[in-house]
Image (cartoon, rainbow over the protein chains, first blue to last red):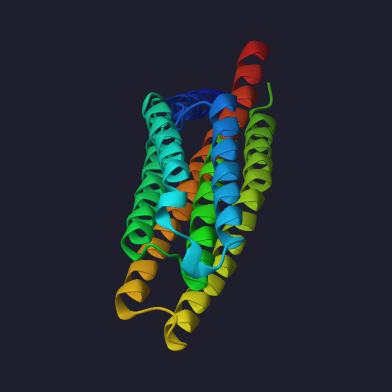
Amino acid sequence: MKKTKLLLLFITILMILSCAINQVADYDRDTAFTIIKIARRVDMFYISLSEKEPDVRLYKEFVSAYNEIEIELRTLVMRNKMRTKNEESIMISEHILQNWLEFKVKHKKDDSYKNSLLDVDWSTIREQFYALAVAEAAKQ
Amino acid sequence: MDFEQIFQELYETMLKSFKKDANKVKGYLLYVLEENKQALAKITNYYITGDFTNEEYETKLRQNMLKMQDQMLAIKVMKKKVVENAVNAGIDVVMKAIRII
């Protein structure tokens, strides 16, 4: 009986140790800070956009902000790619970049920005940043 | 050495860790469901009122789906960490028992 229990314990230990692998990347404080910093820049972008009337939200006035945020997003994607077991955060940051570029192309094409589009785009990207921040915080 | 006690402690420790972290996942999941309900209602409303063209409506739905996918990916990370934390808590119990043996 005692031998059976010992064997059971041994099997349990083996099972647990075999599962004891890190499934996600380690938490990175700098990345968490960077996510918040870029999200803040995007918020500032939309606040300044919303202060103007839709018809005078000309693309040329916002092109430098678009490009600066795009560079920061590309750097964030690269930072996430440098970490192992980080597939989810890589994908989220790539999706944020994808949406950001689509918003930029649409603004360039229309050379104006409707209130309805601003409303939906702002909340979409804000939630994407929130998802990225939640994923990073979960790694703690 | 009381093996029954070890298994009981292992079970309780892992369950406690799992429950604590699972509440965080549940909280975010409920938030995501509500947020998407509101976001889709908003997009549809802009389409009904004529603010969005057909093309804009389809684009916004697609971009929202991308966002939903991101939220699910965040939940996936949380879920992985729940399991990891529960397993690590279990390992601590087993390692403690081994030291006693």
